[in-house]
Length: 334
Image (cartoon, rainbow, N blue to C red; front, side, top):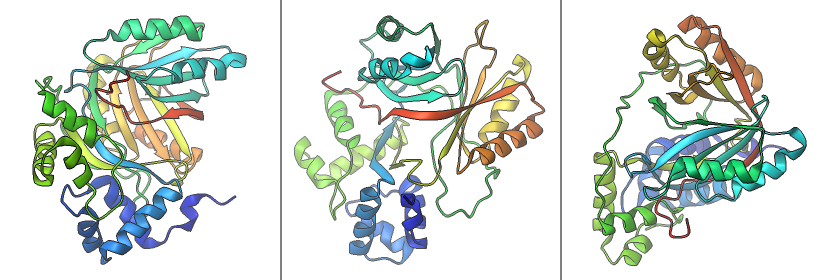
């Protein structure tokens, strides 16, 4: 069976890039997107609906900074007996705070991200998962320093896989003091946006405010850093990015900032951060690489190694996706 991305034309591919990077927070966003591509509003809506039906666009919505909302989050690696991997993954998936869960080709073979709201204790949540999933070992790997975050897949194929860019600033944010109205707005904006002419209108009606006020609040969230961006999230495999490697690096402390900045400059790297080490886990710098093939991931890692002078690293390829959803902040059913 042909991959969904094979059915895309040039306009689809440029539209997908815009959906990930420049979605307009405006009353008629699909009209604004279409104008950038020389398409009518109706044609743009038809194409976006088609991209969702193909399974390439997972959803369109607000991506919030969990740390600014007071959430604790962490990457977790589990070492699970191979015969029990699916069973353990099912236990992990049942937790409402788990957004991503993958099998990877390593002794630590189950990797997931978990977030806990301010009233919950993250370590206790992970302890309970360890108790029920019954891995041989669990390692909590919270982010210690962020160098980059944000997945943007180049759908046009116009950039080289090893292309680089200037990395943005990633200071540790202060926790926002949110009002009940802001929390209700966050709950609405994080939901999948309907693909229609006035998609924000229904959200505004449910909140009992005007469309103009809703968009003003959304722009305020971006201005304060509470919202990283409003964008489409793609299904990587359906989009043609079938290789997903977690590159982990052993880095001397004095070289950490320099190496992190270099890795973050690679466009194929979506996430780059420092995490803790353990006696059986010497890797402190993590860089997520997305590419169309395993060989391409390896070439990117080799180029990173060349540019940083670091040779002690490992690539953990995902072999199975168990769960991939947005974090639902302030969900009432947590």
